[in-house]
Length: 392
Image (cartoon, rainbow, N blue to C red; front, top):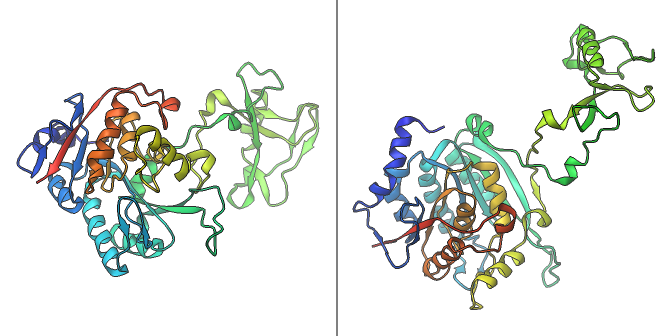
């Protein structure tokens, strides 16, 4: 939660950015609701971030960056080939600045591939603290086989750090369960409390107390002992209350091993995110490129854009409605587009001319009701606005 002073500071953000920060508003490229607190900035990110830091320090809930991977490839919009030391220095300098932007419950997510991932993690550990490293996501970014190389590399990585692990972990959201999970809830005994699933009624003995070791007598008289090395999850008295309340399941014939009934109406289940994100769940580079080709008539779209569903997954975990999101390497504008559709405020920074040709134009289409990407799944129909600024 933002403090009162933080909320007042947040309300002044638009006014303060309008001050002589060398960030000149471009009227023709700004679009939509003039009161919307969304910023698209054309300029070198280190300079821009330094200018924004006084206004946004400690206010950003989620930072996602997709920096150059330094993999030696030549892409449509840039040549991704620096010497390793220079690349690492540039990334370190920006991570130092970015850390100041995060709220205490904020998180940083960095896309990278295997050429620099290990060096990047060591650098990020040094800046954010090893204790604040949360996980490495493996994203299946392609499903086809690449036979022209020694290995067909089908995945990339996303490193995730918290500003403060203790606070940040509590603030992260679970994922909404899909139909597959909900099918586990059934109601074979027609319980008026609705569908339920059964879970184990015993736990590891090492954590139990003497009151959890006993023979359980089922309603039909069958005697059940906990498995070796296990004990019952409840004491004898509590277990008897649960049986009387029809919260213990003994199978359809009453002779089954006792299990706990967990009702869907009481569980409000969420899923803890896994670290392997499959293409079928969060999309691929190819799917993202197809979306861009629908948005833009020219062929010169980005070679390796991120799909909206991938960024949506990150924002579902790391943010809530009206939170601020920052992307200092905006690229084709995916982060800003997803944040806009999900009702988050955003700052997107991009050095290349595609800040104008792609990012600004893409956001205009989003505001006008772009139906691609995640639009159908989130019910997006348009609206909002953004303020385009140029570093001078």
